Amino acid sequence: MRITIVLPTYNEAENLPRLVSALLSLPLDLSVLVVDDHSPDGTGQLAEELSNRHAGKVFVLQRLGKLGLRSAYMEGFQKAFDLGAEIVVQMDADFSHDPAVLTEMARQIASCDVVIGSRYIKGGSLDERWPAWRKFLSAFGNYYARTILAFPLRDVTTGYRMWRRAALQNMPLDRIRSNGYIFLVEMAYVAYLMGYKITETPIHFADRRWGESKMSLRIQLEAAVRIWDVWWHYRDLRRQWSNSRIVG
Image (cartoon, rainbow, N blue to C red; front, side, top):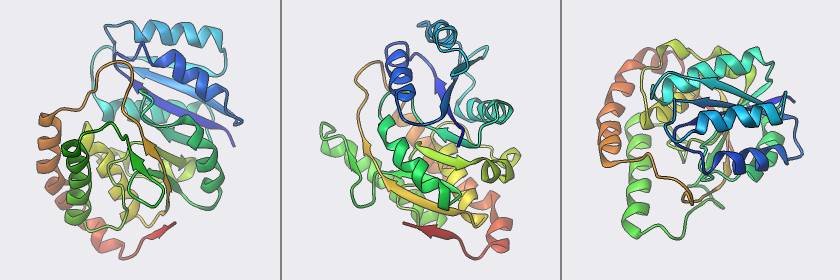
């Protein structure tokens, strides 16, 4: 299976070389596609250097500004298809997602459409260094979205996902309007409404060790409001699909 990792970046110069090295050391047929939003810290230039060093394994999409997570993934997905990817992965560039888990995700994708890296199933966990309030906020945000949208995934806000090419291509990506944090919830919800077979696999979500977090209270508040728009926007799909196929 040819796997392409779509890796949106903004100011990840400290993480990117380490992450690319870790990914390319895995026993998988994979390539890395860096989608950089004109990072002022030189992440894009580093990505180009890595692409030259690992020809055919590292590719770069340079964008003209900070255009957001949604458009980074939309452009990245299309480029991954052009590169011949059979499997497409979404993951963060800050080592919060352990690259080693990809081996297990690749095993599981053979029998489903989407594999979700979950913090909230048995075996999953959050960084032990997080304070109690941060853990509560993360768990509550996930519970809030799951409850409003009424779907049984345990971790709807995770950004660690592996898709079969056909499943991702058949998604109505042109309908997905959210940007930032809520974009991840919207994609998972659409996959559920379309009856995709979704498997959750446990992950440990580590806090970043280098660079600065992109999460803020403003982003979280925006997500809390936007979730209602997502619920309304897909009322037709809710009528069309009465059952999903979530396993694991």
